[in-house]
Image 1 (cartoon, rainbow, N blue to C red):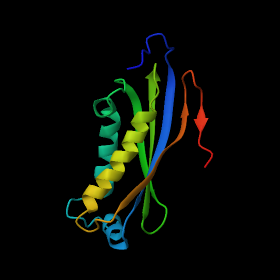
Image 2 (cartoon, one colour):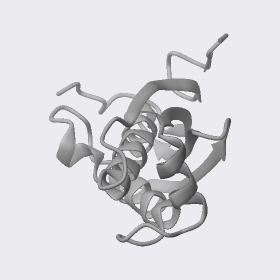
Image 3 (cartoon, rainbow, N blue to C red):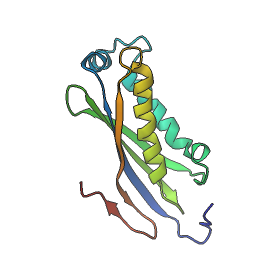
Image 4 (cartoon, rainbow, N blue to C red):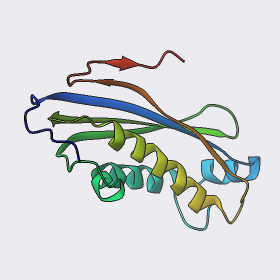
Length: 144
């Protein structure tokens, strides 16, 4: 584990996204809230928040962080494509990129779990850091 003891405490922000591609039938079930397991969007949003808060338990060398906020949003980018976005903020000595990436990954996995009875061919893709700020390495903004 990296020693962050001598690092400065700064405001840290990270934004990440993921994509879930569903069949038309599964997408319609999510949109109409008719899945047997319940409200897919609400469950995935809560799962994403929980995942961000528990990242250090899932990723072995991540530091335990006190997170200031986690914002989870989604957007239907086509009739069958659902994009998740997480913005994680903290004030500390290490960044929150892993927390944001974990959040969008778990949101996508939760959609798969909620929809697998309808569609087992769901594709999860494009898990990526969109931007981050704070810390010694400064800011990052994905160009594409």
